[in-house]
Image 1 (cartoon, rainbow, N blue to C red):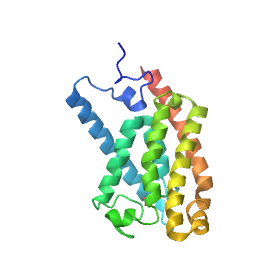
Image 2 (cartoon, protein in one colour):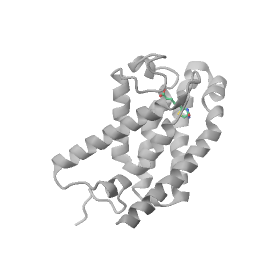
Image 3 (cartoon, rainbow, N blue to C red):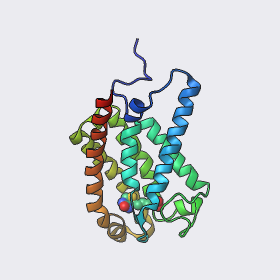
Image 4 (cartoon, protein in one colour):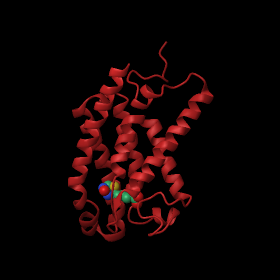
Amino acid sequence: MSDIRFPAHPTLAGAVWPEAASTRLRFGRAALLALLGSAVMALSAKLSVPFYPVPLTLESLAVILIGAAFGARLAGAALVLYLVEGALGLPVFAGTPAHGLGLAYMAGPTGGYLLGFVLAAVVVGFFAERGADRSVPRLLGAMALGHAILFATGYAWLARLIGPEAAWTAGVLPFLLGTAVKTLLGALLVPSVWNLVGKRR
Ligand SMILES: O=C(O)CCCC[C@@H]1SC[C@@H]2NC(=O)N[C@@H]21
């Protein structure tokens, strides 16, 4: 009989810290990893160049790495937790507290990216769980797709606020080169870590 809890391709998180059999331990592990993921997001938001209305940050790199290392469900949980922390008023987003806090900040220019982070992490995690995290070209594709998703939601939301042309100029164009570099970096890093983990076992 197959066990749906242990996929054919365990994630990096699963290889480094395997799931326990007991429900309580599994829940504790998931909660700690989700907290860790949300802390990495908050840190990556603060490593930023404060352009306005859309800052340059390391958040999208963190999103694709969390997706690839955690898998879909855990990455989704970490990113939802990140948004909940922000919605509750913690200064975890790039422009907080200078440009507001909580739901008011999330309804601002970068709200679409924040939503896209959750979707992108889940999509990258989906492909990682199917083995893409072991292959540079496959992970490159998954991470490029994740980036396309978060830019689509980010652009769509920003365009409603400032118009399609201004949204393209302020929210997409300045980030294209950096996004290509982040995608390449993510796709090279995760399979390399897998190689190290594999050699230690
Ligand atoms: O307010 C936030 O914390 C979210 C900022 C979103 C910044 C977006 S993510 C994609 C693109 N790449 C960047 O470096 N900045 C924008």
